[in-house]
Amino acid sequence: MENHQLAQRVRAFRKLKGYTQQELAKVMGISVAVLGSLERGTRKADAKLLTSIADTLGVSYEELTEVSSS
Image 1 (tube, rainbow, N blue to C red):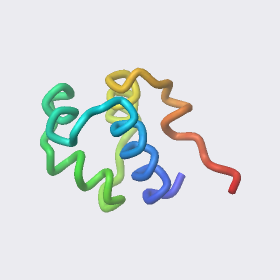
Image 2: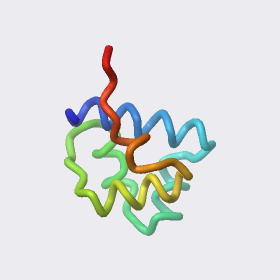
Image 3: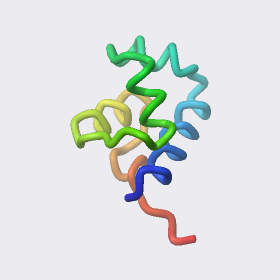
């Protein structure tokens, strides 16, 4: 999955669940800078971070990382 697609999905799920970047970062125990750079597509996330994001947002890893066919 390309960074920009993943960035859009992370941002969309975060907003859907009603979190600000600051709130989600705090709940996850990561910095806002890390989350922000991930959402801008300037940072690559490893599987551990993606799993943590998915778990915190209540979605599956696959939902978070699936590639859109469009």
